[in-house]
Image 1 (cartoon, one colour):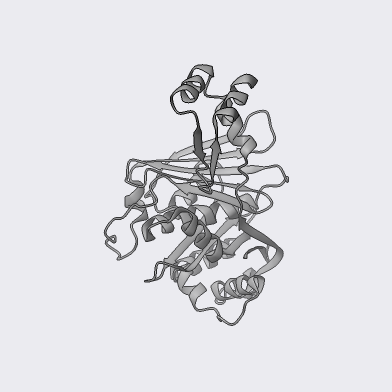
Image 2: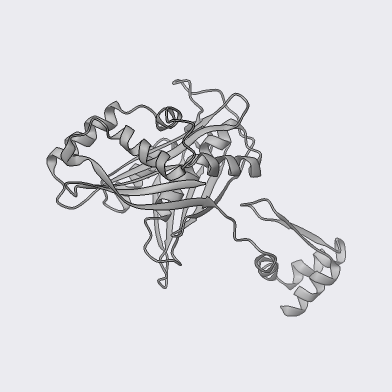
Length: 302
C-alpha cells in the first residue's frame, strides 16, 4: 500500500505533498515487464501523477501526464484521479541505454527532445490543457518547469526510483513543495538551503527503519527526515493522509465502445478476414477477446 501525506508549514508559507510509492512502481513494472530504465521513467511519472491527482478537489476530477519525445522510450503516460487511483504505461517497456554521465539511469536520454502535456478534466465543458517543451526529460525538472510556466506556481519537484540488482524496485517516492501566497522570505531561504543539500529521495527512503510496516508512519518519518534541519517556524505539520494505488478501470464494455469507433467498413473487414479480434488495454495489458458473433453484434449496434 502506498500512502501520501499533505502537510503545511507552521508559517503557512508552503504546502508539501509526499509519498513513498515503492509498491505502486513495483506493480507497474511487473505488469509492463519493464527494463530498469523503463521502470525508472514510468515509476517517476506514476508517482508524480499520483501526487498531482490528490491535489484535485472533486471526486470525478482526473489528470493526465503525457511525456512524449524523439528518444527510444517514445512516450510515457499516466492518468490519476482525486481518490488516489493511478494507471500508466510506457510505449517501449524494453528501452535500454548506457548510464548517464552521473552514473544514473538515463531517463532523460530515453525520452529525448519533446513535450510534456498536462490535461486536467475538472468537470467543465472542456478540459484544461497545458504543454511545455521538455527541460531535460528527467521528469522532476520538467514538472517544476510546468508548474512555473503553465500554472504560475513556484514549486519544487523531487522524484526517484531505485532499481535493485535483481531488478526489483528497492525504493520509490516523490515530493512536491508548492509556495503559497504571501510566503515569508525566510521560508523561501530555508527551502532553498534544504533542497540544495538534500540527498536523493530513494536514499532517504532506504534509510527508514525496515521493521516499520505502517505505510503512513513511514511517510511521516520521511517528512521528518527531509525537514530535520529546517527552522522550527517552517516545520511542516501533517494535515491529511491519503492513499495512492494502482488501479486500471478498463472493461469489456469500454473496449466494445472502442470497436464501435472504427467504422462499419473496417469492422466488416475484420469479421470477413479474421473472424475474431483481440484487443489489449495499454495500461494494465489485460486482453479482451471477441469472436465472430461478438463482432457481428457490435456491427449491428452501429
